[in-house]
Length: 49
Image: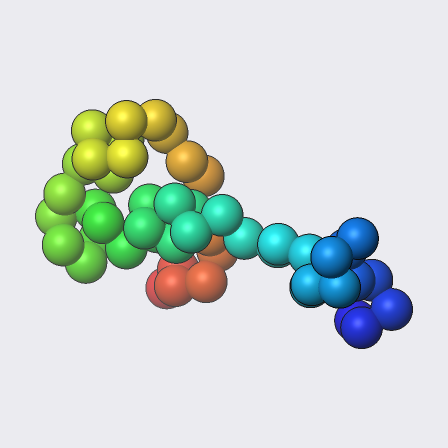
């Protein structure tokens, strides 16, 4: 993983935080993710049962 550092020496971004929000907004909080985030983001397959 450390061999893949970006030009600034930082780890590359792997997940957009808005995908994490989209993952929990509807199922956990009953909110419309697209309305809150002003765009549709694909939920992450982390919390599917």
